[in-house]
Length: 228
Image (cartoon, rainbow, N blue to C red; front, side, top):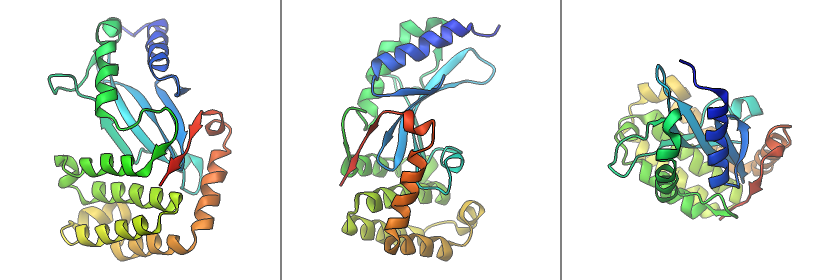
């Protein structure tokens, strides 16, 4: 039996009330702009069930167009309940689990969504994800997180942070499975060179971010800044 639209609407409203800095980009996508990123909560319906699972997501705003930016998140982290299990919330029993879910979200995720956000906090959170088994065993997933760190550092203009991330990439890549990396990113040297060239064309990068922020749907989101 399909879940009633009103029930889903109530679920969205409850999450927006708990995180008033977010806007409904779509019914299950609650976002805000943070510097060169779009971040927020996605309430992902589980297949073949009438349950949903909240995820913290970050999308880029530096790709060539908005469609590319929103194609796939650069970071997606699911929520765990107090027993350390995945949060599967039945739509019909949403109110039973909701306060717990919000509580866990605020403890597990790095973003309060209120006010500006420091790159230091974001970096600490991203670095903590490298110990995740799925990231540890996947070179392409590691590259994706390094890209996020690189572009955030480039956006805030912190040169030593930019160079530090490039150094981290060189160190980490020694242990990468390049076949796995190349399926998603192509040749490693070319990929790294593109990043290094961005350092000298930061103005172009910032222009692209600004252009994407002007998109009709994106520009309606609430926003805060990313600071060094």
